[in-house]
Length: 114
Length: 185
Image 1: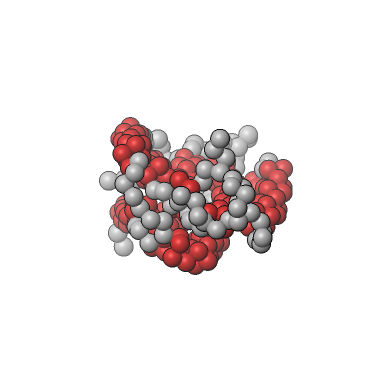
Image 2: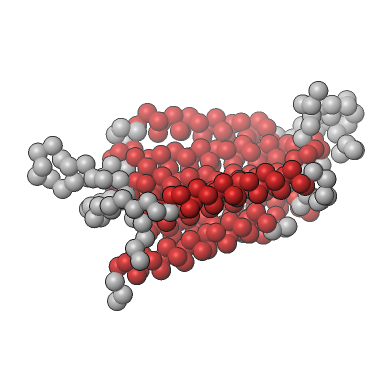
């Protein structure tokens, strides 16, 4: 049995659905943020696996070795950068929210309700 | 020495099983520290999967950014909140949330069953694929402007996190005008 692209894709589908289910089911803000990280990691795995199985680009004159561009790796790099920024801002918001409400339940975040 | 396909199979099977189990632990566990440990193991197992895809540079980035920064940040906040980080549970509104979560799992499993038969040809490992040098050449070549914008984004995120998390002593509750003492409900 050889590991194909489909195995990685199926794995990241499962991981993404676990993260999405956790985001929808849990009411702890911290665990919601962790579920978001799970989903982002699943997407990163998809990018990298698809990059590995993409076909090589032959060079113009056909003499040099074919090169696989790293577009998926570049995308994953930026997703990781954005995820780090999101975690920092999100946890700062959690701290401010806790200071205001003394709880981390998502139900308590109703200050903007009319 | 077993053949390369057996090695790949064992590596993928091990890291995939650890990734799924730790993702479930991240979502299910009651104590937030255990959730954070689940996230830690999940991130490590994903780094192993990245190695099996010969993405060496991103393995290092994953270890530095996620294990070194994001998980530690989560643990900091959990420690800072103490016992309050464990939200009390009640059964109200559990059914709609369970329906939403269950439909997400069903959609994910359906998608997994659809995509699991994809098997395009894999090009033999070209020299330098996924290494720091070859990814860096693309990062500082075609992806130069997004890379610089990412640094602006990270600076803005740091400033924003400071501005949001700075303590406001003596401020009052936004809704009631009373001191924010947690007497809500």
